Length: 558
Image 1 (tube, rainbow, N blue to C red):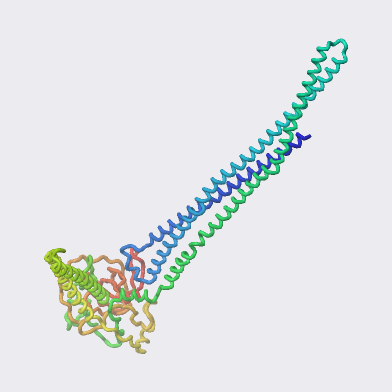
Image 2 (cartoon, helix red, strand yellow):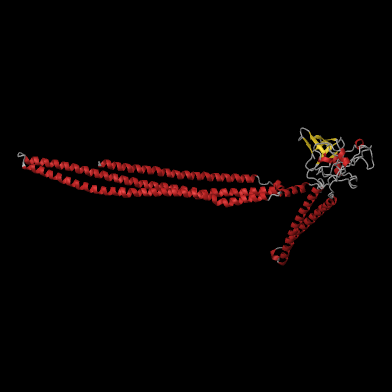
């Protein structure tokens, strides 16, 4: 009965240790699982930061696109890219803090936890083994005591039979008596041993169940609670790592917002206007053509083959090839004086060159001043250097300054020429007469402006006495005479009459059909050809252009 009860107790204790062993092993696996989760999160942050940095780097301005960033929208985009780079840096900070504050700490703690768990369960197994050994010793002493008691009883009974038998000698009786006494003594010794083991076992059992095992369970419980607490602290740190970078991330987002709010559409559009305006005046009012009176068409002043007083029709007498604008034809980088550009753009380029020369002159003058001071120091303190050693460099700088000043004066002369030739803004077009409106009530083309007023943005100059002066032939013009004619890329129809007074332009009449040999490049002019010898530029807004199938399709410039 006692053995069964003790076996049940030991079985329960053993089962409890097994349950605790499984649970604590599961707890360690939970810590390792969470640590693995944080490690993967850290890797994701590093990868994300790397991709953000690569994206920001990919869209950084190239060397040949720096001019784009004069616009506020492009500068805002550049600021956004820089802020995104800083934003990526904060994700790198998150990954680094996760690695230092959680991953490394949890890895170290997991190893310590495994060692502590192993120690506690070893102590439990030792205590269980000790109590089981004590029980075995108690059982052995008990069985020995039982055996010795039975042997003493049999020896006593044998002695009594021998003593009662009259046929047995006294020697046999004495021998039996001594044997019975010996057995009784052995039984007494076994009893004393059993009693000692009994008391010892009860004491050890009491200590085992009331002291050792509860103490071990308490340590395991504390270990488990520390594990759970440590896991909670790691989860809290996981959130704090993100919270620490929120202020800086907020600043990055504020920077993006501020950059977006700094965009000025009007300023950007004004920059485009300043960059591409040509400086030409818009065309004047369209003259009324009275078809009720016989009239003779005047000769186009764009034909260089006709004299100013010639009244013959242009169509039959013009055989010479029309000269092109000097600023329209551009070979390579263009002339040094930027004469291939429209007046306003030419003025800007010349001014920019003058500013560059002035900067270079200032640099050279600063170097000259520095060398002059150095020479004065050498003169006052010959031991520091030879004053004459500075003279070659001073002479070289002087020559550089003279060259730069000469170039600057040359460009200033061209600039003065352009500024003196720029047209003054004309008054708005006057209202057309009622007769004009009546005769032209039916539009020629759906894309024409109503009342057939010249469209805004056309680039031409009003007829003046200065524009009627024949331009002398130059070597630059002869260069174009030797060129092969350009191929035809489409045709066009003149929506308005145009009198080309400038060299390189071509006069056209309303409704005239021409060949397109060069489409508008963004400057407002289209190069057309009337026949083999007559070609030139006409404002794109005066034409309805139809390109060939190989071109971009039909377009109307208005």
